[in-house]
Structures are given as structure tokens and as C-alpha cells.
Amino acid sequence: MANNTLSSLLPILLASSTLFFFTTLSTAKTHDRFSKTLSPQKLGLNKQKLTHLHFYLHDTLSGKNPTAIKVAEAKTTNTSSTGFRTVVVMDDPLTEGPEPSSKLVGRAQGLYALASQNEIGLLLVFNYVFIKGEYNGSTLGILGRNAVFSTVSKVREFPIVGGTGIFRFARGYAQARIHKVDPKTGDAVLEHSVYAFHY
Ligand SMILES: *[C@@H]1O[C@H](CO)[C@@H](O)[C@H](O)[C@H]1NC(C)=O
Ligand SMILES: *[C@@H]1O[C@H](CO)[C@@H](O)[C@H](O)[C@H]1NC(C)=O
Image (tube, rainbow, N blue to C red; front, side, top):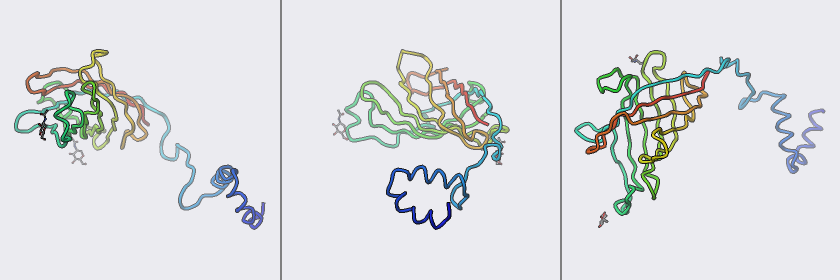
């Protein structure tokens, strides 16, 4: 099809439902400055790997240096038995073993909101930010829910929605179990087990 025939057809195409077909056809043929189709191999995306990570998260609410701090609540939050409408920001260390002195492998940075009216239900939005070895600088993004006192299962599970560095194109899930919790302060050590597909 000659170019001028194409441009005279353009208004009709724009007005019709064949627009989708037209744009598909034209991007397949041309490379413009904005977009192009790449082969995954060109980005070094050859074989998908499955990585398992295991570490402990230290969530400290009490003392001089808390790692999770309430930053916001509504005027009416104190009327809710579930803390509904509270927002907490955290920067929790991740270590190889359960002891706080154990080797640091990264941090969990982000926030959680108490998002349930009927039970303690957290909306979690955070990144695992790794510093250990080849993972230094890479992150995994979590968007999940934690029904803290749910008795359905002792294991909490959160989706991995993406990642950076080594974990580009990541997807997977993380499981968390309580290792130790201080009932007075709420300070907790949680065992995390992470399964991530990536390249
Ligand atoms: C909640 O806090 C407000 C002040 O922000 C106070 O006026 C109100 O009495 C409190 N309600 C309860 C149930 O404690
Ligand atoms: C991680 O990388 C940064 C920047 O290259 C470096 O300064 C730091 O020492 C590294 N950390 C570890 C634990 O290797």
C-alpha cells in the first residue's frame, strides 16, 4: 500500500474500530523513537531462575530506636478496636539468623496500614532491600495483607509484585512465621522464606 493511499485512508481508520489493527500493523513494521519490540534475549533474559531466600526480620516498636513507628491516624482511630485507619512506617533489619547480632543481609522498608474494621488486618507495602553479596542493591517489592491474629494458618503469605537489579521481572511469594514476640511491647522477630522467579 502506497504511503499517500495510507494517509488518505487514515481518517476513516481513525474513526473506525479497525484502529487497533492499524496500530498493531504499523508498530510491527516500523521502529519509531518512542517504542519498539525487543527480543527478551537482547536484554539478557534467557532462562528464568527460581531463588529461595531465608532470613529473619526484626520489627521493634519499643525502646529508644524503634524500627517501626506510627506516623498517622484518623481522629476516629481511637474508636476502633482493630486500629483501623492507622499508618506505620518501618525500616526493619533482615538478618541471617534469629539473633539481632546475626549478619545483616538487608532491610524491609515501607509501610503498613491497619486496613480492616473487623480484625487486625494490615495492608503491607514494602521493599526487601538487600545488601548481601551479589544481591547488594537489588530489591523485591511486596504488596500484601497480614491478618495478624488469624488462626487459619500460622504462616502469612505475601505476593512479590516485582523487583530491581538481580530481581528484575520478579514474581513470587514470601512466607512469614513468628519466631519470637514480646507480648508486652509487640517487638517481634519473624522468619521469612521468599520464593522468587527472575532471570
Ligand atoms: C478519641 O480522641 C479524641 C481526641 O482526638 C477524643 O476527643 C475522644 O474522646 C477519644 N475517644 C475515645 C473513645 O477515646
Ligand atoms: C553494597 O554496595 C555499596 C555500593 O557499591 C557498597 O558501598 C557497600 O559496601 C556494599 N555492601 C556490602 C555489604 O557489600
